[in-house]
Length: 376
Image 1 (cartoon, one colour):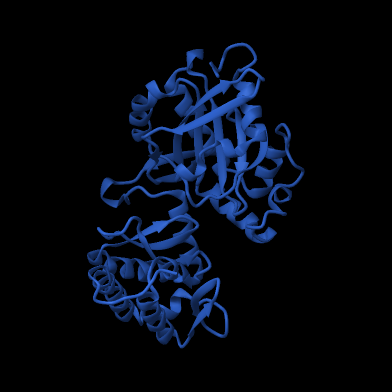
Image 2 (image 1 turned 180 degrees about the vertical axis):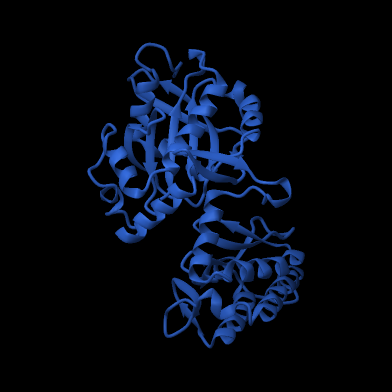
């Protein structure tokens, strides 16, 4: 195969824009924001009042992804690239849903209605929920901005350092290099690579001054640690269910930390545990954005002599039962529904922590042969 250098002949930025519009899966979203799910192409060359966004994508849950295609051999200054991205986010943050939908509709290959893009996707929200999610992401400047190109690797450190110097809305900025190859039949192989340093811009205070969105840095003492958009979405959904729920869940996570249990947020918050004699982390269950807790993964990773007492302890806390179907094992309330996290926390936090401590102890006993059993 022959390496195709982007920028040579027909393989220019417009070619690259067309490629990712028709094949969004090329973008390594799972490496950058694991909770985003599938990307759906919305439009190209979307006007913002601050220039044109090369490519715009959505997810079925209303996440927004902007992509700028840059061929570094064009000599475009890196400061211009960053300033352009910041301008796009600031411009979109000033838009309500209707104005945003109108702007997208003026782009190339755009739909008449944004919801039409995601309507038939199995993970799509209801239309009203989708509009609310997009509106919330716009208002908070919560977007994923990707700079995609060839020869980008040499600019990584300088771009990362430059981004760190900007206060910003709550968006993720990622650098992705795309290597392309062509075989004798003319087929193109595109190999994306997310560079080691992807940057989460810290939240700033956004004020509208004289019709423009101005982002002011927050005091260092008040800044939170970096977090992904997926994580921020999860905590927002928890707060929407109950304003006290994020504090309650974080208290539970803090209680688990001494045990080595840590949260991993993708589409849901997973309770993970790394043990020295295990090939991969044990998943003790996951909290979905709708507040439902499912311990199912543990039954596929632990012998029944360990997962069943854990499930039974959980069921007892919420007045539920353990469902043991051939293809699915879980805790249910009211027949087959999963319990809500509010049914566990905060009133049963100590009991839940104790149940997890028992799982950890039993895994050690299983490894030493003190208890038997087989993994399902």
